Amino acid sequence: MLVLWEQDGVPLRHIVDRLGLNTNTLTPLLKRLEAAGFVTRTRGTVDSRQVILCLTPQAKALRESAEDIPSLFSCKLRDAGCAEGELSALREQLDHLISRLETLTQTAGV
Image (cartoon, rainbow, N blue to C red; front, side, top):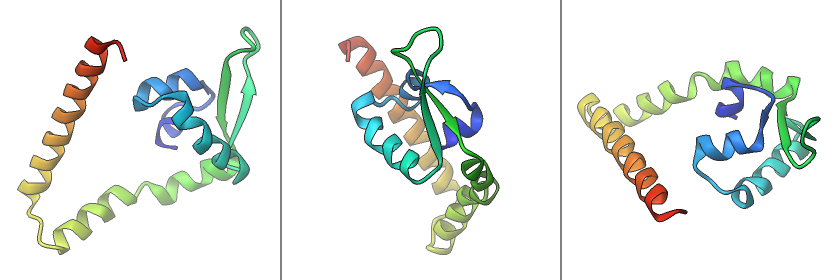
């Protein structure tokens, strides 16, 4: 949903690339989102093999309520005893791990 909130009406390939997941991983999730009324999947007009994902008005309305989730999550971690420095270090470690995994999958041809 976050990727689609950034840019609506994108090909499935865009979502695959942004999330670093395979289509066979995303397809079941997208089917559930479609069944719940959050996305529509249509075929591309230029290339019918391409699947275009669009948010429904219901999904667009969720964006405002979901924007507070990251800060609420951080607050809960602080309440649990995590210091701001720990949270920053964790974010840096996760960014580094993601970068290394991306490099690994690119060099391995995955």
